[in-house]
Image (cartoon, rainbow, N blue to C red; front, side, top):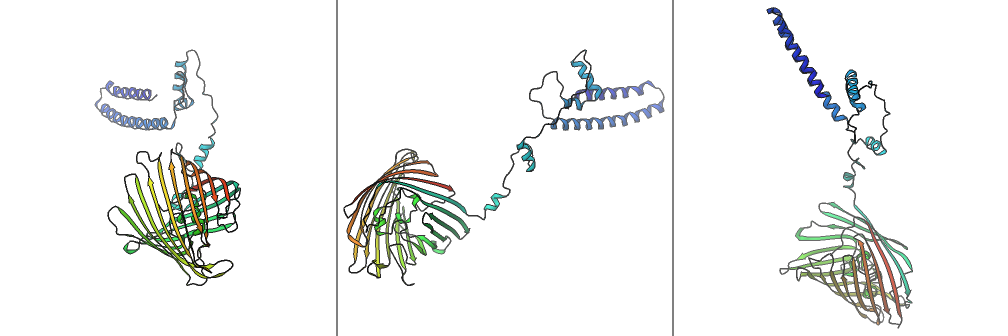
Length: 467
């Protein structure tokens, strides 16, 4: 069509040039020349205008999916003059008179297209939902929820004086909500709220000052103390369903030494290749069955020294030494104001080959704890430990074994033993399924055999816990 228009304009131009050559009068020639130049300029303007209209129609008109060779689309017929459209129709179909194009009903836009137009997006572009959601989140903390569901089977008739108590058959053991955010360039905040079947508890909630002089890092709030390894672990990061006997008997069990206070830590100078960190903490003095305060001066303290070293490119060793001191309220029958002191050593060895790190790894742990508890009529000196090994034998599969032995804090002559075997499957980084068999031999000469099933699942962005 564009070529036909240009050809018609060129023919008109040549005919206009040829007309002045038929007269012989000089005045007429001059007038014809001026008129011819003006007409050429007018024709050029019309050509430019027509080319612009053609480009506009071609860009706005989408080509049909599979047009027949001899079929004229309604849009093309509408773009042609009536005479030319009839002439083209007669050329393509001899003997058939040209007829007016059949009007077609306008197509209704699809729901997605209508939604796109309503959102103000141009066709062909995906709509943007939420507006300035990224900017709004800048002032909101990272929110996460971690669920811990436990099922138990087997028999466990715990003696009256035992601190280890059995799990119910089915239990939503814990639902932990985490709120974490950078407060400003000098501090960050962390809150972990635990929802259990018996109530709500602020497991941890503290502010960390990361820009103090001389390399110090301070925390203030409620936090798990830096005594040993297991006491610092939340339930969902442990490689077992339960906690070792020594933690239950001597360090307060699941809650452990978890209190409101102040913490100060600093990396110390050390020989090359050794990471050395010292931590000192002061708490109010209330930590389950471990410490109990009566007056404001009955605070408890915890000190911890950690040394870390890479042995090879795939193996490292982590050692820790802990001390804790606080007041206790004696026994149920003979209460009073006494002192409890705890001493702890912990060692962790990790092996993770660089070339097969996602398929194989090993973590060995052991922790030894001594307890000196003053009470009437005599001081109780108890000892306990656990040793465990956890091996990754496939990309998503882990297995482990743990041996426990521990005296009881108020009865040094009562000693419990235990053994646990675990098998864990990680469908992804956000869930894990664990099975555990636990055997316990109580000091009262009672045995228990139990099987646990644990399902842990995570929602949202949950920050990493201390290494």
